[in-house]
Length: 128
Image 1: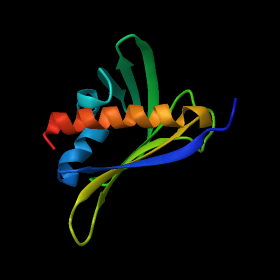
Image 2: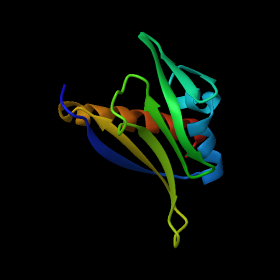
Image 3: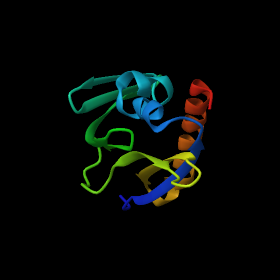
């Protein structure tokens, strides 16, 4: 298996960091846009998608209104994770979400498209 490569996407969003953070850290928030259903037991989150087996991820880190980092249970490399980072421009106060993830080199473009579609769903849900 080829080594996964890190990539990042930045999405501007018209929402406060406190409001958007809830969509990244809570099962109910994540099930609004990221998966069909999400359950959590402590730091272990289980994601369900229609037609796909469930996938689990461990919550590695979180900082209120700033970032949330998960690691898929299937990833054996310690360096692999996916993260939602909320960034506020100091001058304009514009809010962006930076998504960091890892994918096989030949799957990066399709992974980016998946994130773009998911994030569009989030923007639609919150009216941003």
